[in-house]
Length: 271
Ligand SMILES: Cc1cc2nc3c(=O)[nH]c(=O)nc-3n(C[C@H](O)[C@H](O)[C@H](O)COP(=O)(O)OP(=O)(O)OC[C@H]3O[C@@H](n4cnc5c(N)ncnc54)[C@H](O)[C@@H]3O)c2cc1C
Image (cartoon, rainbow, N blue to C red; front, side, top):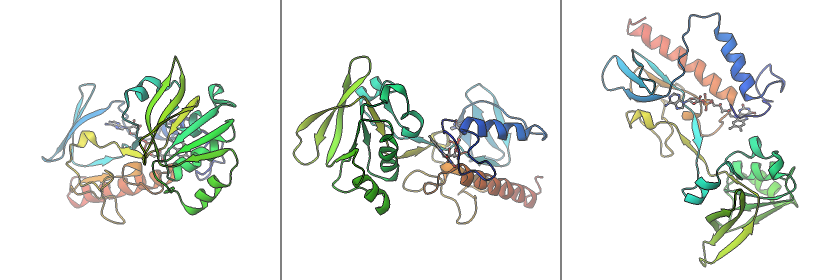
């Protein structure tokens, strides 16, 4: 929904952004006998058959098979000051928000040390007067090529061994208090924007641990299939995939899950 121009979806040469792609998908459904219900799933009971699904709008559904494709949300720093300045200078998406006028020609910070953090820092050099990359360790986890790019881009300074102790400002964010991981001393850094790039949290809370997950909380599937630990439940997209996380790979996974679900229903003579 928040993605800018999508350049890497087959047959779409960067003509649409994320919401445009969603609209195209919705338009494509019109010719099919498919009902779309806009609601949050609050609970799912996958222990009894048929499975049951309860939504926040009070509706409830029974079903023989389920495909889970609830994606993953960006992780956030658990600080009260982060909550206060969220959307007032703090964002989890440099690609979506980096070009906003409040960040233009201003010093900005990126928090993290992986590929997303490196990509965010490089992206922000287009708009910022300076980009600080704040990392809690003494080496980046990002791929070698991204590390090389970050360290050879003049507009980026990496602050090693630092964690964010607090965000400060008035109406809008004005800076960060950074704690040294080695000495514990606090240093203030004046920035107008802070972009968190500290990983993703798969949206599985409503499943109440009924499906097998991996160590990062993504749904575990049988290799090469979309089958989860519960027969008849399939999963696809960013909820499963921590490596590629792209619209086209999620769509491909959705196709696999639909085919797996259909085959399973036929095998069980439920379709
Ligand atoms: C800023 C940004 C830019 C990107 N740019 C690109 C790009 O250029 N090219 C590309 O290929 N990919 C891009 N991506 C990645 C791409 O958007 C994702 O990989 C893709 O959307 C994953 O699809 P998904 O269906 O698995 O999850 P999502 O698209 O996250 O969809 C999950 C859906 O499930 C819903 N949901 C969650 N929990 C519940 C619940 N309990 N009940 C009901 N619904 C629920 C969510 O609201 C959401 O609508 C970008 C992502 C971001 C954030």
